[in-house]
Image 1 (cartoon, rainbow, N blue to C red):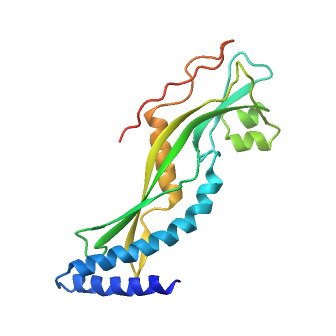
Image 2: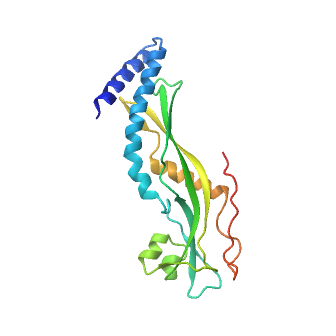
Image 3: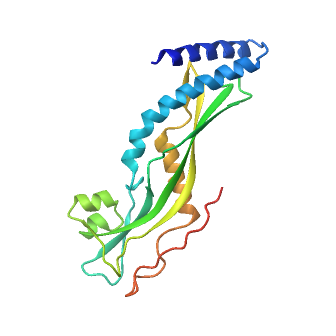
Length: 216
């Protein structure tokens, strides 16, 4: 661990001990808390960077397929959420709480652009119909796209992802795992505007949904 982070955490621990003991905190104490979290945030962003890079243009949760009508051999459409690009900027914040156990909460925020995306595949029905895309592709399925009837599409959805931490046992700890936060984000996006087309594709192509603002 970096020495400056150790020193910041020791300073923060002293401040928290004052709070727990009923002493008065000062602007200097709050500044120590902010400095400690700022240093931690820099390391945490660097640690999570490979995770963001690995998620780019891949489905965050594996979508399940449903059969497309008028297709032979039978094709299946898979709809889900992707990450367009890895975040290039972030912001952080620290706030005081009323809890004696966790008197401070820190947070990181990334401005992201998600994609409500679809793709098509063909393969054995027992492995593709209602099954995850990975299962379909691992059992004889293959991706397919045509210029007209089975055209893949995506809707861009800007979203600021907030990731919170609490200070416990001399360390900043996330309230939830990043996977849990992403799973909640995906669920909310899917509920906000289903991306499954309501009509079968025609010679004019698959119906493309219209983007609507995400609820805040």
